[in-house]
Image (cartoon, rainbow over all chains, first blue to last red; front, side, top):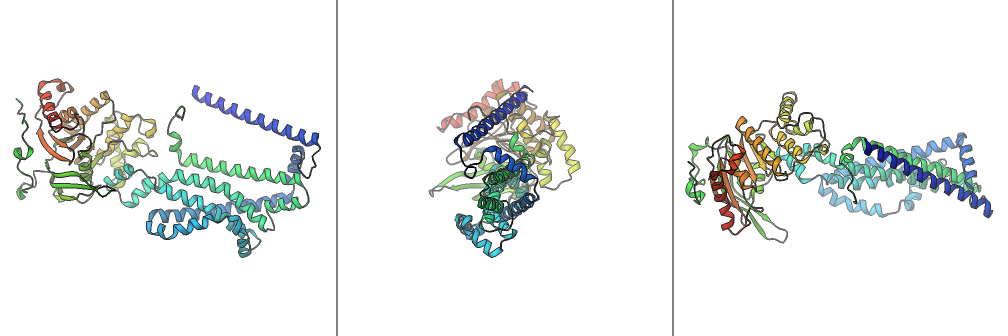
Length: 267
Length: 283
């Protein structure tokens, strides 16, 4: 009970500290812009960003672009991570396939996705499809790598235990290997969801008719720096929110990882 | 009272197991003849983990295998559990040549090896699930076993909420839940403190005498081996082989106090002799 309230106190203290830091930072920024007379098209004061954010929130235009980008992020994330998961399972379960395909997968991964984004836009057009494809290629690899490592992380003694009770290969997979892989898969999902936000925006920068990335470019052309900043804030909120959702799912599904006990002092 | 078979090699005391008597197949549950296990290391050297192991195990017998680390006792147990291949020799279990894990087997490992995402009851039910036995029937049995080892009220707790001794007791319940006729135990109490260990020994003796299961216990504690066993198999390392098989004819049920009697001490001394004379570790 007391340990609980203590950690709650510490949490509240941390929150207070980071909020204070934030407020001081904002005040300093505002003061610097006003005091030094920095042009609004170079660095907008926080007050202008806040006004731009507030105004755009009530415009139908933002809602449409927001919906397009979120759709691209989620669709790309699902396609890419499911692809990574499936190929990860196939590779982890059959070493010959790994020897044949994995070098190519790694080679493909080393190509910067920004570099192939223009090609994908040419192939899949200026619409939503090309953004989904770019996002999927980025979300794919974290899932692939983590699924393979996760499926190989099952402790020898747990598998021996099951086999000694006459478990089949499929039972060992279902009762141990799959569950041991879950924590790794969630790390992969967490990385992939954050990268998916980047993937969608990169795709929109290369060529798009809608989306928050497209909106940023438009506002940049119009020297609307405060508006650009407002969209950056929305983007980071999307990223934080999605990361938070993955975290909730992780704590629900891989519940035993949080039960390992008290933290080791000094570790 | 006690016929202490002093320093007589096993081969002289018992008929050589290599000569299989076809009429005697009902006498034993397990017959091991000329068993060998050779490991190949990465630098190409061979390690003789087990050399010419011969042993018959009678039904309802309690056998302890004692020996220092590296004598191959865990290797022998894993071969009997069907999770390790033998290099040579023949193992017959329940009248059939051993070729893999058996449903008639319960195994207790050095570490409890519980699955962290399963509750105590779900962990105990693992063999029932794996072997697709009747869930309702065996769940009642599982609950009874959990109660027997003093874990009532912990059925729905997770392993991380249990102490090491409690986890090991869950492991023992799991090995017994499907009512196997043969129980293999690999240093099951090695990680426990002395007091918990003694009470677990008493508990194991009770389980054995009530269920009349055949038990093979691997241990590095000589007194634990003598206290529990009908026969103590003494092994020495490099290469791992049986140097003696000592029948322990102390009366049952054995109270923990028996460990301070001179008869008990003689058995212990008899076994320890093998390790000191062989120049290996004194256990």
